[in-house]
Length: 118
Image (tube, rainbow, N blue to C red):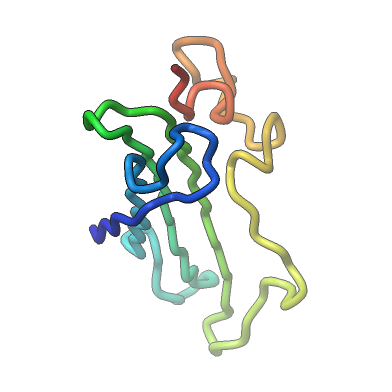
């Protein structure tokens, strides 16, 4: 996991941009990808994106979390089955369409439970 820290000017969180730092992380896994055999194969990249802003005392002032699942199916002959014009969006943009609420023990969709609030 890579984390980059930089000043966030114009954030409105501080009078001095040097007092605010933001860390950004993008973590990607392809562990759910599968080979083609009798059935189609799947190239899947799951990416989690996190941004955290801290004030001059190191206290978290704000954060945002999102995740995107990019799933591209291919036939056992190697042909891409997923339409090439398909757009992949994060779970925040999917909102209720993601459908986590049916499995949620807290009765919330991913975009309701996946963010920090202060």
